[in-house]
Image 1 (cartoon, rainbow, N blue to C red):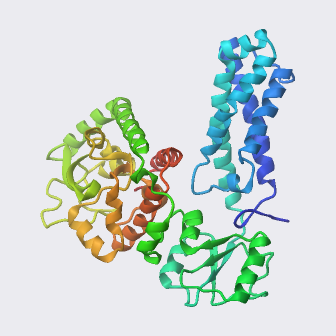
Image 2 (spheres, one colour; image 1 turned 30 degrees about the vertical axis):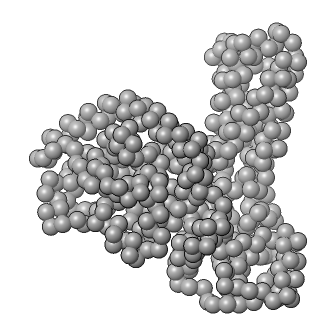
Length: 442
């Protein structure tokens, strides 16, 4: 079966078709629900207003890239940009409804049919892509890239890339027949690789033929969604784009406002769970309900974090220890509280106080940060922002308690700091919900 080339790798030719069909069905379902609830009747699916809105909104999705290769293949992230493309279609859609006359305008807008249908379809379009991307991801061929470097591929890089579906082949030089052009998905150039004039001409031919070429750091960011801290230097940080949240006062104010609103909403919504968790903790184990501990926050300042106690009261009488998944110090219901993240709910107080944010690197203990900073380059950079209740590392990497795990999580944390946006925050929140529902650990 023929496969169509995407911006990186290949995907099933039916992928886009299924997305389009799913969107058409989703639009019909959203309109049916909205019309039934607001007007008490089903819409006329062959009417001018319905067909016109259908064509208009799907056209906006095409223009916005929801059916292009880059828009389709967003496997590590939820395709939330699709939701905002749908919302952006509201203006041309309203102009179209207005052109149909006052009667149609009143029925569709005044009675709230169109707003409900638009939001409902936006949610469905995101779910449609998430399911379809996961389905076709399992059917994809292994993606391959040529890594141009004078030195052999390090074990460290092999270990990092082996967790993905990418086949990275190292070569000290490039020539016309290094790799068949119809199979090579990308070229990755190491910082120390200096191409000759002849090799530059070959690289140019690859670029003009449509093969993407990346630096090693760009490759990690674009396809592994992490920053390779062991492969970069100070010059990379100086020249690299991004890090908006470090210098944009508007971004910081928006993030603080969403933190306050989110924490207060979470407190109200989870109040019954919080009360029940407190009662259970008190009944199953002697000791206090809450557990407090010193953690390292923004700019290296320490603060006291609060959690529901999930271990016996004297769990660290022999000193600080890494927590583990099957820790024998855990009390009854403690593991459930951890995997469901119920134990983290008291940290809403830390968010309201300003010690933490909803999204950010998880705060670590000072006993461990001093040791990790000695072994892991740029480890202290995770402290340039507020720590979070959840983060990109927590939804991208399984639970771990070692220096190697801390290194991998740092790479995801730096990716978040460099590429912060509201859409990325929403992605992390939704993925946190999915991980929590699967009880996938932290």
